[in-house]
Length: 68
Image 1 (cartoon, rainbow, N blue to C red):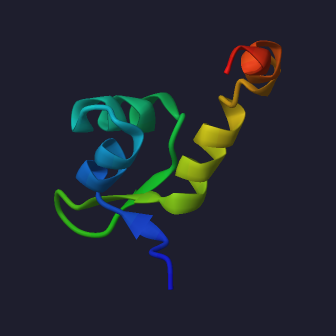
Image 2 (cartoon, rainbow, N blue to C red):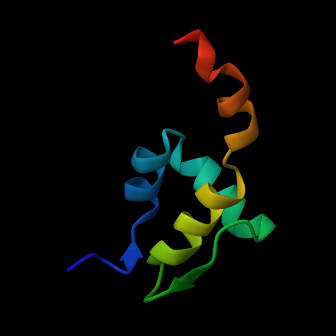
Image 3 (spheres, rainbow, N blue to C red):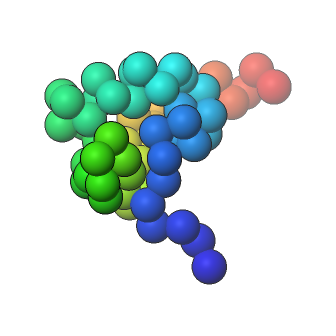
């Protein structure tokens, strides 16, 4: 079963950014999160997936696919 809530460091590793970027994205509303205790932030996996899908560059990939 896939985890639905992830720690900021797990999301950072998955996306290849710092955990401070994850905190900033939560503050900016780019990622949805919840607090599960004092100092315990968890990010919803579906918001991580949505962020990735929103930033897909399919058109650019198609344009350059003939180069490979």
